[in-house]
Length: 189
Figure (cartoon, one colour):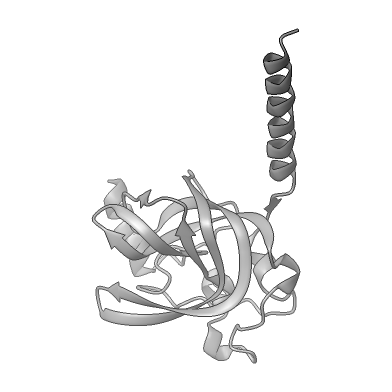
């Protein structure tokens, strides 16, 4: 057997093993995994409680996920963009969060920096984010229709792989009378 071929086969086999181990070590998490199990969930509108109503203001984070590679699906709200290229965004559990609906508690917001700019077709596009989760409060300045808003996130994922998804498995259902539902229905028609 050619020695170069043999070394190449061993290297390729080792790389394949490393890739499959990394994939096996990715924790597929849900929004509930980012908040304490004891944190109340609002009864009306099926939305998590607004931060101001929580005893800890939603600042209690899940430290058992620190430095772990996770995959989480949610809705992308651009923070830093140039046209349709997004350099940083907030990942939130429901459409309209932070602009037309209540802002989720910090432990339900992830600040995401993709490895490469993500081409986004619309705000609140459903995406899946894979990367290393780091707990820690960050403030982001959002430019929304009503003006500028400062939003606090409880987690960051830098160098994230971002992929478009059809749906978010644990999405929060918006109330029928939500203004955001009216806008979404107009886009579909």
